[in-house]
Amino acid sequence: MTSYLAATYAITPFPKLWAGRLSKLMSRDGLTEIVDLGSGAGGPVGRVAKELEARGFQTSVTLTDLYPNGRVPQFRADGVGSIRYWPEPVDATRVPAGFSGIRTMFASFHHFRPDPARGILRDAFHQRRPICIFEATSRTPAAIASTVLIPLLVLVLTPMVRPVSWVQILLTYVVPILPLLIFWDGLVSQLRTYSVAELKEFTRDLESPAYLWEAGLIEIPRMPAGVPYLVGRPTRM
Image (tube, rainbow, N blue to C red):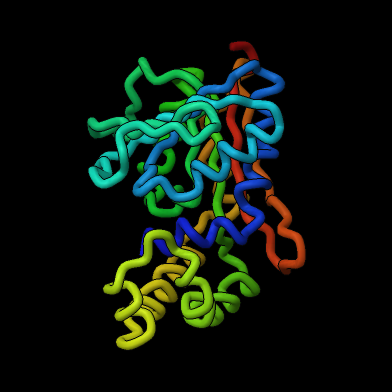
């Protein structure tokens, strides 16, 4: 499932749109280091880094997770700066002070219930670290209805997965378990995604002249529903 999801980012506009938001923050504050939280298997980070390179930013990315994915190489060079996976557990609500740079979460914030979600934002606020929350889902009728297309997309896009295993082929085309599981994962993700109003509420008690929050929707070309984002940054680095 994670291999399929990572491969699908190649045909979506999300990496380009997220990189556009990140590049504005980097241009303003002179930052090129990214600390990704809740990275899982790495997801879209490599593609976002490539989009940033196209905009002239050579990034250094550290992937982190409470349960690090041991199958992801600890370090790899992608021609877009460097990307490494931190081998020790990192709690997104209590990030060690030694991790500097822009904190990011790509399509993972909805996995956290309200209390730890607030904790993630509070930790960035108190440590005066910039943080960017980007989602690829939206709790809107149009987005929820679109999940009915997921099983068909799994059938069409699975050949794009590299490497693709015989087990994945078997569980996609012979015994179609993966299309159903990925459909369920997508539906639940849409239903659990926080709205812009909820993101603003999470930051209501994190107000300071030295730290600014911006929440809104990223409009997706040719799609009826945008996806929410939240950016927090200190006014002085």
